[in-house]
Amino acid sequence: MPIERCARSASSFAIINLVNPLQTLGLALGAGFSSGLNLYATVATLGLLQRFGVLRLPPGLQALAHPWVLGIAITLYLLEFFADKIPYIDTVWDAIHTFIRPPAAALLAYAAAGAAPPEWRWGAALVAGGVALTSHGTKASARAAVNASPEPFSNWILSFGEDVLAVWLAWMATAHPFATTIIVAALLALSAFLLYHLFRFARRAFRQIFSAG
Image 1 (cartoon, rainbow, N blue to C red):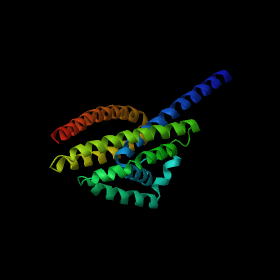
Image 2 (cartoon, helix red, strand yellow):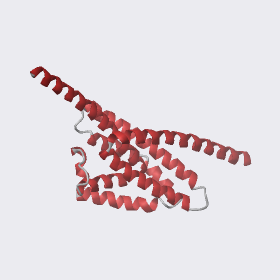
Image 3 (cartoon, helix red, strand yellow):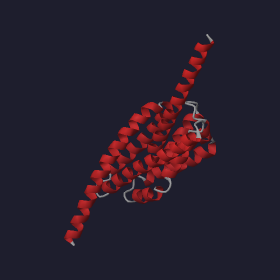
Image 4 (cartoon, rainbow, N blue to C red):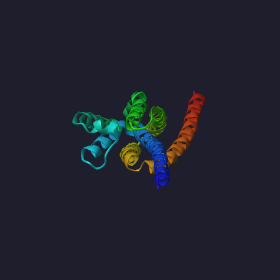
């Protein structure tokens, strides 16, 4: 019996060690991608979910439910909500947030992985920062291309879609981290596809401009 108990304890320990890295990866990927789309919506969503007891955040993220943090996040989200829907203003806003979204995503992932070993926390921070930079770059590039269109509706539709996706991924990253890993992997593949074609589109546009000149 003692041998069986030791075997069960060792098995449980192995499962816990396996689950924690996977949960850390799901949190890093989900929080990273959503922060790259809309950092303030991500922070406000996580804080409100914790505040109203919808889910329990990791200890390192529970400070997001503080009224001051929520107030700042919601205020900045409202500011971004309007700035993000005005052509060319959204491009300037995205340019500024190139230096804000990826580092903030890394910080969120580092705090979320507080129960993990230090190497996993730093790994999660690096992954989240890289994922946030990818989603932010895709968002900014797509918006710059859409701004060339004379009608404003494409810009508004993209903006609303990004907000909804950011909120949904923020919830998924904490409630279903395993599923989030698969979803974000697919979104990263889509981002790579879009960035490739947007780059080709921009290159053709520049060639036409210089050839016309």
